[in-house]
Image (cartoon, rainbow, N blue to C red; front, side, top):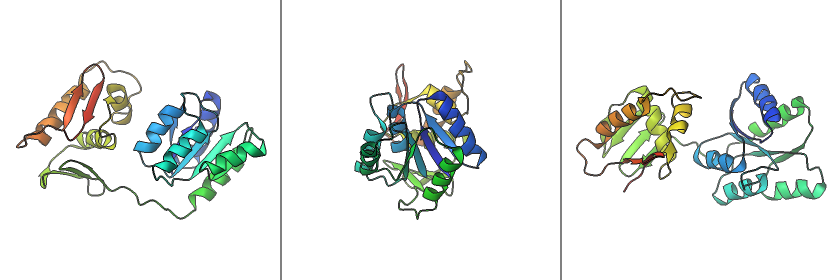
Length: 225
């Protein structure tokens, strides 16, 4: 499963992420509620594992309430040091599917994760992304604009996919380095600018309206206008 772990305690996050990865799961980690909400709302996950108390102005309950209000039905497992019955009830009423009190045995966490993963899927997976007349097919790995096929390289496809998953939002160079190039440091090169420039040339050729825009001192954004 692809799991989003939202946990601000670095030691707990390392422990849980390592264990889940060893069990064969793919794990993304966010250290605060705001980043967790951004990832959960913009990417596809099979399960969310959330700390109940989170920094960043968005705690676990608010995060889940927001996702549920947007129509998300992704299963949620709360982790929390708050063991009172009222707190557990509050988490479940907010839209959580299970609640595990800290400290916990990893074997129990894994069992609960796998139990939630066995539930029938309720959300159809996203197979196509669209922005205006641009379409990216995740199954066939093809790109078309205005019905015309656009030939892109694998790295350009990943770059475009990430931009389209965050359509209308600023995507920073740091985010692109981590998600598209798997760099967790700045290589001090213009590799992103070069790839964006090539992608722009391919997407905009023969069309009046550009789709990829530079946001000065911030990054890039793909939008229809």
